[in-house]
Length: 78
Figure 1: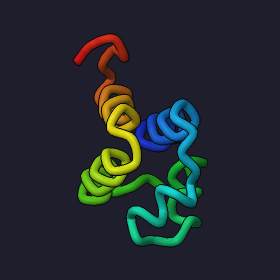
Figure 2: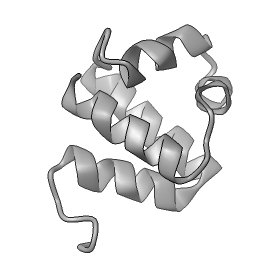
Figure 3: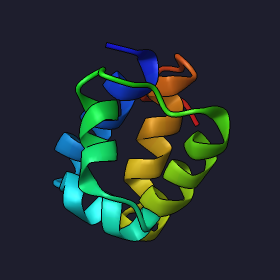
Figure 4: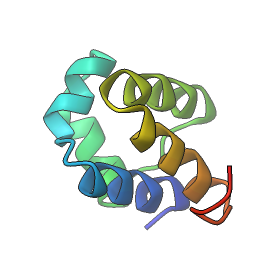
């Protein structure tokens, strides 16, 4: 699984955000989110920015966790 997929899966599970919720916020089909979370496909750099924005709308802490995990920072750092 790709780095973005792992980070996204952890953020969604940690904060109880469903793939469907994220997909709706992004305005895309849930199957795209499924592919990222399950490592079938990695989001491109533009999509990563949109994922952070969508997560921020749903739960700012989830967005922060996603960014930290994706950037290999300790979850305890800001």
